[in-house]
Amino acid sequence: MSLDQLDAQGRLRHLLTLEGLPRQTLLRLLDRAEALRPHAFGGTALRGALAGTALCTLFFEPSTRTRSSFWLAAQRLGADVLNFDASTSSTSKGETAADTLRNLEAMGVRGFVVRHREDGAVAALATAAAPGTVLVNAGDGRSAHPTQGLLDMLTLRQAKGADFARLKVLIVGDVKHSRVARSDLHALRTLGAGEIRVCGPRTLLPEDPATLAGCTVGHDLDAALEGVDAVMMLRLQRERMQEGLVASLEEYHRDYGLTAARLRRAAPDAVVLHPGPMNRGVEITDEVADGPQSRILQQVGNGVAVRMAVLEALLAA
Ligand code: NCD
Image (cartoon, rainbow, N blue to C red; front, side):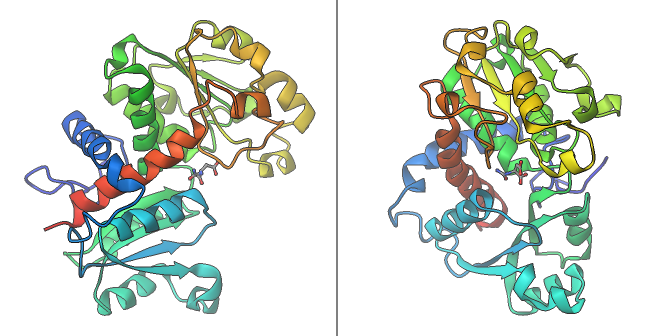
């Protein structure tokens, strides 16, 4: 997939996907996010960065962490932030997303953070946008969630250091329907992760071989956990049960739930990540989610810093 998120000089124009994003660009964003961390949790020092710039969070799907952290990130940088909620807007009267975007552009909005249930919807909006407008993909269908991928890499780097070649990373669960997993996989490959393992039931792993290129694929979680440095859990999307892809929550938990006993198979200093929202007692137990190896709330905090770095890279003069 070729996407015009870089301009002719290789600068980032939009952030639509981590696929094909140059390593240097990815590392620059991670470094900048790390530097911005002290400003992510308070203060007014950076309020000048995007002062006078209007930004809109345009969400056609629910969100807790992603939307709130983009809001905070934009405010820390001094932007004027508008929130567009598809359920209370003219979308429910049949207005297209492109028309909504053009109307907000006409009010002077320059940046759009967009989540949409359809694959490719954010890239399509980027095509419809005016030349100076900037789009950030906050999750489209099962395709991409680039800022989640970045915050996951930042969290891994903080825990394990910058040399990804030394790392064995395991992704567990519903990779097939997960935009988070796809963005993580692109980023892990770009950063040269030593070994990428993927584990889940056959019904929840992607059929297209390109998605799992270079990964060690397995269906036995106990075996897959052996010696890994990081475990990235995914949410079991309960709607998959209605589709008959998972027999029951109990069975899923038995086979693919991360318990403290199971986690002992990983390296002793292994860390556990989860993008949220978690189904406690299904893909992860309380003991692990709230335990010493969990980096789940650190991910959430990193989300603000990463989103500041992305908005600054795209919108600051
Ligand atoms: C995810 C999403 O919506 O893509 N959540 C998030 O942004 N942190 C993951 C999910 O819904 O499972």
